[in-house]
Image 1: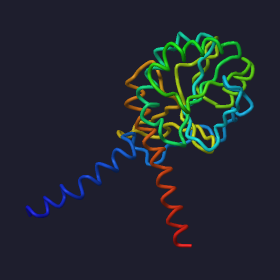
Image 2 (image 1 turned 90 degrees about the vertical axis):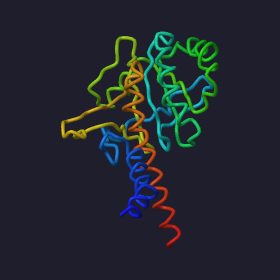
Image 3 (image 1 turned 180 degrees about the horizontal axis):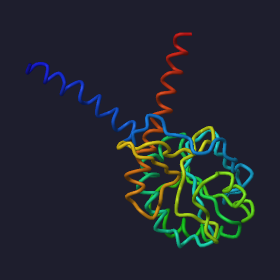
Image 4 (image 1 turned 120 degrees about the horizontal axis):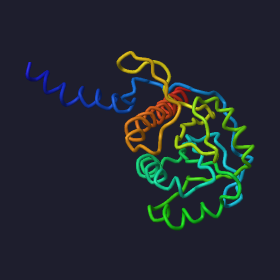
Length: 219
């Protein structure tokens, strides 16, 4: 009996714990799709006048609006809780959409604030006209709306195939659950909800890579 207990603690319990944290505590083994095949951002330009595509990357997508400095605290929350954990994952990026004309505000934010936190590789600011932003956002088919500055405090998870992912179904208690975005105002939402969902989607891709690798070896 004692031997079986030792074996359980040494071998079984760590595996159970790994599966629990790898799949998140949100009860989803695979993160549900909220909106399929959203538009790309590759026709818009960054501060370096380069295009950024949502395809082929796990993307945290956000909309900052005309008043960049108003969202400074939100940037810190997102940077420290989500970005800093995944910044070295080569298929991860952050894309922030802003109206044309806010470039100088973004440069000021980078110079005075974000650069002090450390690297911001894979963190992209893209600029478009207000009309383009409105049309793009409407195609996400979300319940939440942009405010009159073309901003929202929520950020969204987009997978490599440009599907917007979130929570849709039932929670652990069997109650209906729907979550399309994660509030950057509340660190608890990023830490308790978005962190869990990022674990699920990263686990999805690692599992897929492992399956494909095994299939290649068999061939």
